[in-house]
Structures are given as structure tokens and as C-alpha cells.
Length: 396
Image 1 (cartoon, rainbow, N blue to C red):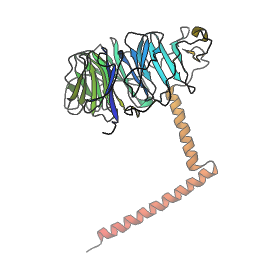
Image 2: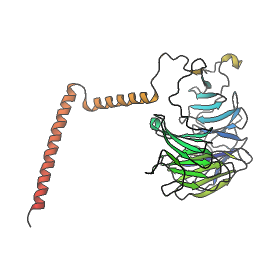
Image 3: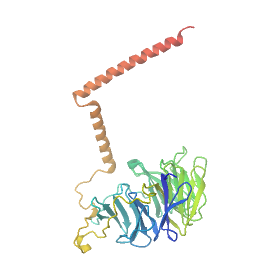
Image 4: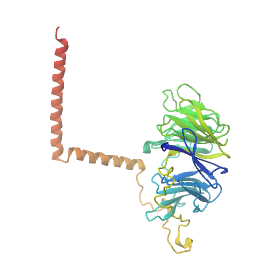
């Protein structure tokens, strides 16, 4: 059997059978399992397609596995506190963890030394946020951002029984959907045709974002336009993920099951029982080395530094870390991301114009040539029209 394009990676809070495991998204058969400990919610990630990282539930360290090995590495990433969320950058160069009020960033350097920076607010100068999205009346339970860059939409779920869709560029609320229960998880499909919302009652609600009758504020109701319900879980839905082709929906729940659904038919394709509430479940691209038992990571995982300052390490060596205090040394306001994107687009257009038309006199010459070409094409088109007319009107 050829290696799959996508796999399911999931974990539960019990860790009796495995800490996390990899499954076939189509059949539910188990490919690999990783032993040792248990992983907390929203803290399971893949680093550079070569390592799996999972923050230990209730502890201040991160477990590490090589992608094709079942047992943990002896090396653990010791953190300054309990990790509440964890992710790795797509390029495999950074690992970020939320610890208390700070975000810790470990950067994989070219010399294979890892250090971290702490991103925190400077109390003397708090930077102004670009937007404040504050329409929810109770705590937010999940947030998901689409794939459209500066034009992306963001969905937020809340215990106030609503899911809201926002536009990043303007901060405008595009849609608010009211449900009968609190919503614990939310995700888009890759094309953002549908919004999937996991309820505290175990139901998963599919909301169509392409309906012609859609209103800004609406109450969820099943209909023929794409608003449907997936029924099967017996407890709150903790996590949701959609395959890249948009045909499969993965869900994890506190009822200790992971379920794969066919989006079109709303039928459960397979279900996997766990020994505890499911904390993480996601459909991810299959790492290249996952099914190669003899392979080894191209770059050995170096030791993560726990301290920022050399004096804290006790060995006189420098970790290379630094503390980033947002807004502390700002001389003048920098342009926003969208303004920088507009500047880059203008620059690209200018370069394209120059490469196509040239500069100065060359531009005038090129414009004249194009005008002559247009005149020639118009004449040819006129001749063809007259010839066709003669053929059609010619008597038999």
C-alpha cells in the first residue's frame, strides 16, 4: 500500500494505550502509536515533519518523539511553567508555547542551538490592537482562522451559544449564528464553503456560508441549503478538523471517541474508542519519514534552553535569547500588515510594468506598436465578419 497523503493524529487525556496515535483517515486503521505520558488540549504538534511534540498534561515539560519511533526520546523540553497551548511553524524553524501570560518562542538556529524569547506586553506602554472583536457575551471556547492571508475570515465559538465570523482586514463581523447549546469547537473547510461547530451536547452543526438567503444574524435551523447536523457523539465536541479536499470531517469528544464523517452524507465512516476524553484530533499532511522505519531526522533535535540570561544558566554560556516587550522601543508607528501588503503589490506591479513596457521612450514605442497591432486585429475581424455575412446571405 502506498503511503497516504493525509493522516489523523490524535491524543486523549488518559494515555493508557498510547499518548498519541496516527490513523488512516479513510479506514480508521492504526498506523503508529507513541507511548508515554498524556497530552493536554491544543498542545500536540509536528515539528518539521520529523518530530512530534506534546505538552504533558498538568506538568511543565514537553514530550518528544521521532516521527517514526514509538518510544519517547529521553530528552524532554523543560518549560518555565505548564504549557496551555503549543504549535510549530510550518517551516519547522520555530516552536511556540503559551505559558501563563507569556508566549515562549524557541527558534531552531542554523548551529542547531535552540533558544527562546518571551513575547509579553510592556506594562509601561501597551500597543493598540488593530481590532477588538468583542461581540461575545460569555467566554470564547475556540477560534479558527481561514487560509486567505490578509483577506482571511476568522470564526470564534463561545459559551454564549453563538459562532461569529469576522473579516481580519476590517474587523467587521460578517455573520453571527445562534445555537441551542454552547459551542466548544469550530473550523472551516479549506474553501470556506461551510462552517462546522461542535456543541456541548455532542452534535456537530454544519452552517452553509454560500446560501443566497444568508443573513448577518441568524438562528441555526436545518434546511436544504446546507445547514445540517452530524449526530453521534454523546458528550461535548472538543476538536474538529477537515481534510484538504473538504470531503472528510474529523471530530474528537469527551465521550472518549474520535469519529470520521463523510461531509456530503453526514454519515460516520468510522469511530475509534479511547480510554479518556479526546484532547487533540487533527487531519495533517503525512510526514515523508513517518513510514520509513530506518530513517532518522535530518537534524538532531538540540537541547532547548530554559533560561534567557547567561547568569540564570550557571555555566556562563549564552542562550542567545531575548525578551521582546511589544511597543517598548517604538520610535514611530510602523505600517500595518495590510499596508505593507499593498506596498508590496504596488512594487510588484511597477516591476512588471517596467519589465513589459520598458522605461521612458521605450514605453512610448511599445504603446505605439500595440496600437498598430490592435488596428490590424480590428481589420482582420471586420474582414472575417463581412466574409461570413456574404456566405450566409448568398442565395442557393
